[in-house]
Image 1: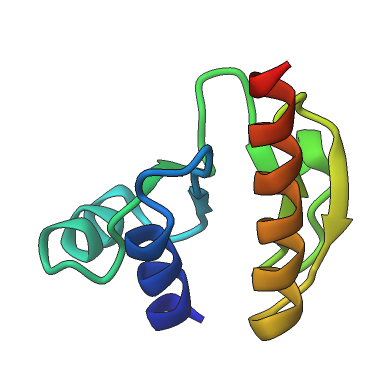
Image 2 (image 1 turned 180 degrees about the horizontal axis):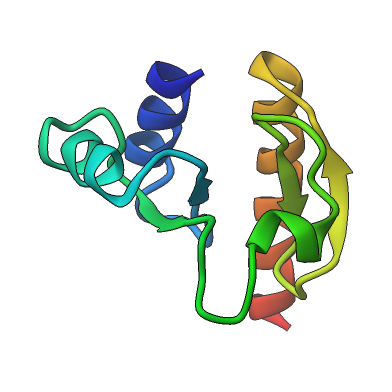
Length: 101
């Protein structure tokens, strides 16, 4: 999945699109992945001072993918590959249309 996510981040860099990762690895492992370019988008560790993000979002397995629209509404869960890319592009078009209004 990571190569696909990297290519989407690059392809859609000028669009209303962002990937935010919640990483279950240690802070050290996450720092390594950012440093070596494995992940090129914003990431957080699952351990936060206010509790695990995965608990708050009801994540039961890794990876869990939530696709939110520009209004913050979860529109899809666990799409991957071409299905994820198609859903993202539809939501980008919706966001761009709303900003034209």
